[in-house]
Length: 540
Image (cartoon, rainbow, N blue to C red; front, side, top):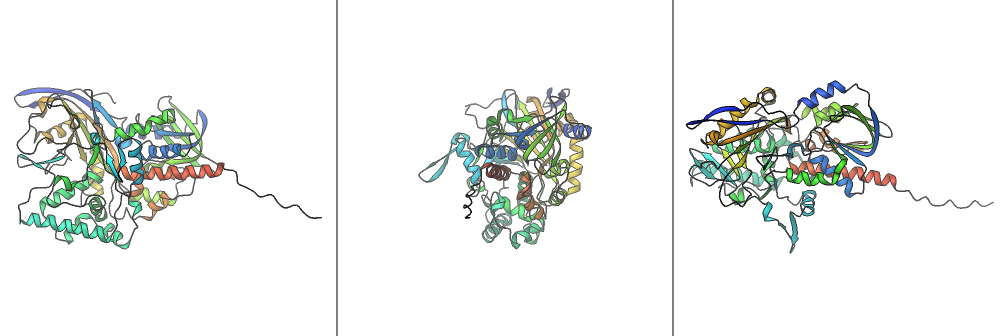
């Protein structure tokens, strides 16, 4: 954690109050500063390992798991931050766990076999009478979602629509479009398991907003919800993401329920107070000292017999060189293109094409329960209609305490905007903004639904991501360079959700699993002696 800034005062109700907090995480300065400052420094020592993995996000941890399961233990994972997990790290305030990023995992569909295998391994799922049964303690408790609009809370995240109204008709029309497109074209998680067709390419060539406009789907309530869905999964709105991404959001999982029924609008999800950090910590635990945090990878140079990885150690303040038979690059593509000494053409092309959305995640510790307004009861996910934020989740929602009390609310802001230029401006503003100014924006937004929040607030910790997740803009998903990187035969292998053009747990985990299994297969084949039949004796 960076040093907290001074506490700030604000007016809440009739009394003034103060709260503390600060920026958390290692900060963007570490990578930016150390990469340029130490890139030319000579290594202080040289070490060896069979496999080096750069990045301990979900993809890197999945690659490490696949290698270990295949019997490859001589591996090292290098992570820039002080904790593993990437966008799935966790935090704690006031003794309560809370997320710093991804906070839930939908139940895997039939194509996400790697994720299903992990959930069975962790005891979250088991098979009974031919079906998968999930541990109810980890399924999101009801009520799951609600929407603040016109001074009331409403069940679900769709605006209410009167029977027979134009809005209800648009809901049904969009549901039919998703069902038809999903039937004609296949959408899967992970997306690589669906064949890429001319129909997919046509969707990928236009924005989701353009696709909706062409079908007359213009109801403001529907469009707000679809824009919210895009910001939630992709970090940017419907005017920036592709129509493929917009349809994929629904067709690959749960479809679209026109009446907003909570049970059918979304699949059940697994969640924890600390979010997906619960999964990350269990993936990281078996690695022990193979996982090295506070490490800035400076360069990767592939040779004929091995790969040289130069790493700046934050703890030891020196450059170390690691020689590995294979390297798995589990970092965003723009980072990979910067540190690979001689990037292959597909890497250069993909890195130039894929852009990333900045994000702000705020954790607010409140000393007592907030006074709730009329309508739907307090839920796990609470969204304010028309807000630039994505709302907040309640870290204590999964608890079984009989009376509401102190808790941590985690608010999310996806700042990809409606264009690449807007995304860049938002990133610069986020990285240059003071903690107190950012905290003020978050508090003012939530106070629209909870006026008593400011006077009950104890602490607000903020996490900023300059490049949180890939935006599936038109032309990204179908780009041939991404497919080429996913099947490379070189000693440097790529494993990241960027290869799918967007960022969710299923894509990252399956990408890491594939890369780790591929490397393990090559190492194991290389170490297995080949049978050579004896040559027949020569007759004289």
